[in-house]
Length: 358
Image 1 (cartoon, helix red, strand yellow):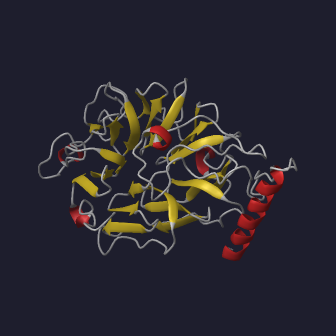
Image 2: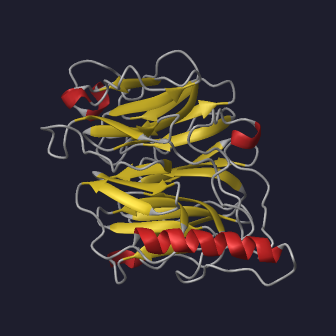
Image 3: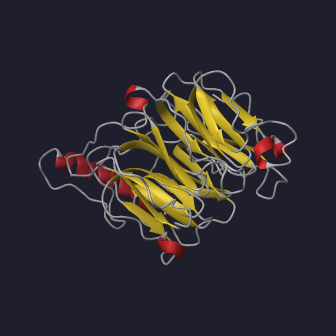
């Protein structure tokens, strides 16, 4: 498989070169050869500062390569959390993980020894894309079917065992086929970002419109209209940054909070202008344009963590951040100076990141 992907990289490079000479480029529809017209990597790759401004912000103007591929992507996530652990891409492109295993005991899941562009996580499983544009997975139960042939820019997991990814030409593929609630039937078109929730997925297309699919029992697959630059999905809700910087959310927790499992107010965003979002299981955090973090939903107090509202995952520290990620009872982020910081529950060391991370 690795040799086959390296061959595809060579073919993609050749197609790009020939497309400059007005020769028809290569497409990537249905798992075909990787597209030409640019490398299709995210606007803020691993190893870059990616502070959420200028070229590293949540989204930029649409671009297409010489072959007609849509290659513009929203900022690639470099940090991800599951219930018991966290992983982040350092400045070398390597992934470092901390916390406990999927059952809450033992070490955190070990990532593959590759270099990566993007990492995400949901329900105990990590999904990441290597610098060779190959999706890889580690952690809990993983997609049972083989990864489709092709090259990808972003990958995510939904409902443990379903994977969805954006090809280097912007199409979405999900596998295995035949999944419940239509999770393996993504919308057609070209997309700049994808995110996976507990039982639903959402994406932003080339015209900056939102699309969601999968389970809709709380309205989590029914996004608002308008134009958006970034989206993040939690267990049963999602939030997105509109083109003017305000946040809109939908799904569970969008009613007046009563602090039950499905309604902690995780989908009732504050006012303000944001540049990055992270939806956790039952809370959401966002980075404002000044780099500070604001959170809403479960975890409004920090005491003994006997309930979801007492773990402190919605009480961010002072300071400024590039990116953040929300888990079950904690939140972690990459600070402006490139170090890691976490808040909320520290069970199993999930909020004790490596001090030497850079």
